Image (tube, rainbow, N blue to C red):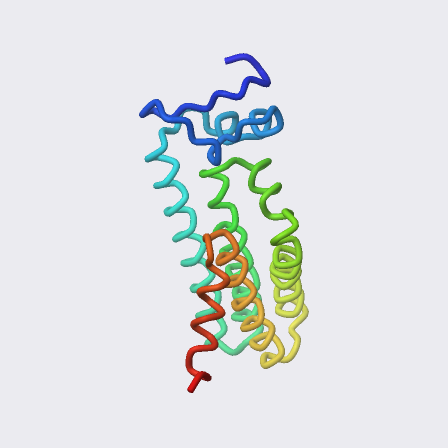
Amino acid sequence: MAYGTSSTMTSSGSSEPWLGGSSSMDEEFGCKQVCPDLTYQQRIIGFISCGCIGYLLAFAGAMALLARDEEGLNNFAVFYTMGNVVALCSGLFLMGPGKQCTKMWDETRRITSAVYLSLILIVFCLAVTHQNIWLVLFMLLVQFCAGIWYAASFIPFGREVLLACIKAPFKR
């Protein structure tokens, strides 16, 4: 296929514009360029596997906090941050790096992305510099909430459903 063409076909022959996109930028940075031999099913498996591995690493990092010593805090910082980054990168299997960055910094989720990425960095820095464990745990909770809000922004009506679930116990 020539550079800049807009056809993206899956193994089933159907066009999936959200996988590789239809513009020349999407073709240049799209998933077809990064993983050209993967089928649609393999991309889904990669997405799920990468997400699960990321969240397992993050969970292992959170469990390292139970050690309550400097080594546990360092392990937490490394594993939890790596886990979040790996889980965040799972979207690369579906849409490629260019399209994922475009979607992350879209007007509707720009603030969410910035807050989530900033909190990953803040939690890492707090843990590495051995700050108060309660401050680290509080920021971890804030980051977790930001991660859920970020993930919900990619699901149609995800934020609305999440808000409805949060408000439901308070309605009478």
